[in-house]
Length: 305
Image (cartoon, helix red, strand yellow):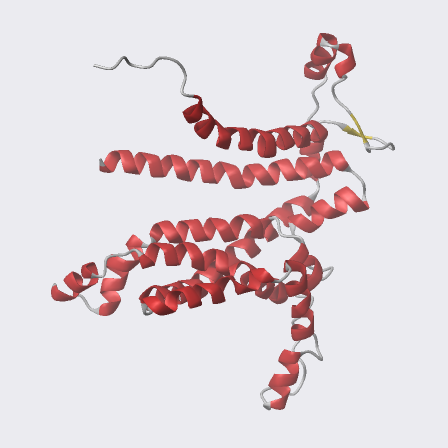
């Protein structure tokens, strides 16, 4: 028998370690920097904060950091209703937008999955076609569509459906339209991936057992597509919560979302510590539920074995 090789399989280590290295460099280190700034004090300087740890003092600087640790910037978020309203409004807009994307995207993905095989690449290309244009340009294009003298009002008035222009621009309705338009492909693609690989004979068996088409959909098709539903909802909800460009361009000054609040704190008030605290809390709002959901999924999979 050939001798068994000993030693470390560096190829395997590299393959497994690359995702963790990516996570460390592009998530954990930037997050640590943001937390460090959130625990600092505002100052009239460049950058506009006083570091909480002086690395030049060595271990003494570390001890001073732990002894003088101050969460004043986080407690300030609880004292000012602006930040609470920003969080709540962002969550509300993101939830409604995600639900709208699901209601629109599911029939589209279902139709793509049931279309003839030769048509599916073309339909897929049409879904991702907007990505070939700059995101900012696509959002700005909606101004020309939604403004009082825009394409939508001109079309509705020309058809005699309205007498006065609809006030859509600079409202939450425009924000919903912009978010749904921008993030709808992120809902369609995972739904299509789940529906396209579903075994059609399961529906035939359900029909043979007396299920109506609607009942077969709810008892067979929809449960099998739940992984795509969950993935699509996460892909839409997470970026929609922190969205800045769409509410700033289409929502106007009256739209309150946490992304606009962050921008105002960083570049308007130049209060980097408070803005960093806002970003840390927002990240915790998003990451903790996802981790709990993943843990629940793992337990369900273990129980099903």
